[in-house]
Length: 330
Length: 302
Image (tube, rainbow over all chains, first blue to last red; front, side, top):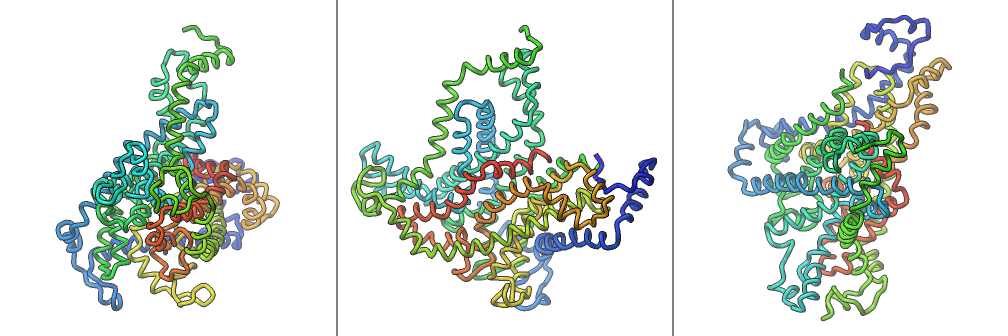
């Protein structure tokens, strides 16, 4: 499908026109009055300006500034270009960087390999329209409408060493008060390593429902005759899903994949509200933010971290654009 | 396997295959649902009990008994200045929603129903911008907010930083991407004869947009409004980054300053969490159809 859906010219002009698109397009466009053209220009121009000014310009700014040193004090003339020095410092002289980078990768892996498939599984089960399926859907989807900051608070309710659900439950079950006593209680959110796993469980609680809804919509749009044909051909449920339904879901798979990756890179709120992203909960997003909000703001250095994040996210974004818009470009 | 070609017969083949595993499936679904519900259910239960009956008591949190009342909700509401922060949230969400939907629908109409040379390029730009992690832009953005001037009613310190206006603008810039993408897909499905009819009747571009196309997009706008309300309401990050004055924080960002105060008392924490979660939960349950439609509009039509 071509992307031109112009208000067509009066019948006489449009009638026998052969598709020599370039000329035709210009001619058609000129049918609009000057005022209409101005209107269209403003309708696109103002929003596009805001978008470019507040997102793309700062993004380019991050790239440029990552090659400079500037502490933010004094004018722009104090900016000095220092080549790749910020990146060298980042990789070799900044201890929090690699653990945060690793946490981002673990987050991504956990979401891709556990939370997303689980969401897909729930969608496949609930797509069968069993009794009560709407209730199950609502319950699974409920966490998605909560902000990750609230999820962080709720995680505290579950995990806190002497007031949390888990440890109090352990006391009730075992009858041993050591589970909540200070000193012997497991500090789920205060122990490096363990705390990040617990954060992933809490964040996954929200992600599963999100993925489930996306797949449910996709499954609803799968033509039922495909399934019937597969059943008639003797395919079992698993074969039907993996050989017939899953390939048809390709557009949804792209969306879910990209959403999962981008959400993993954006993760911030939950670790920030739990402990400001310290003590094993570091993420790239937190390091960049702390660099700005902290006492000594190193702008070039912070920008270099932002560029790393950009480099990781640019691949999925281009992949997404190519998959969703490539068809129209033809 | 012999198959009857009639649709009734083939449906029986399918349903016949599905009846067997139902007990197991239901058991699995019930277990998963209980696990999923547990954190919120636990929050509700904890919030209804006084601290003295749980934390400061040998009974502990995993127990029945003692008093049940709404005191924690009253305390959280007052101690955390929640009315003030809810007001800030409204001052951000309402203008942001209106501007996002107005601007996104304009761009979407222009890009999907008129031919520009840069149609696709612009649409890609908007979509890609929406997908960028926020932290990619924040270092220069923060400087920009400190430097950009703004006049009186919109800013009380002359710049964009520490102003609700600034928060509205950054939501606008980011969310334009998603809404433009969704709406332009939506407008592409509307037959182009509608544009032609309006054109023949002598309607201007603006008139066609305002009186013909916008009313047709009402379902998509409703779905996006529901979704965007939740997203902007739930925003934590921009408030933390671009505001400094504690009283100006929208309610979700205000949670950051409350964590220290609340974390010593889980009953109060539970009540506070539920109060802040309540608007999004209400919107979800009241407008579930719109909410889900908004999410899926953006994905299935890709």
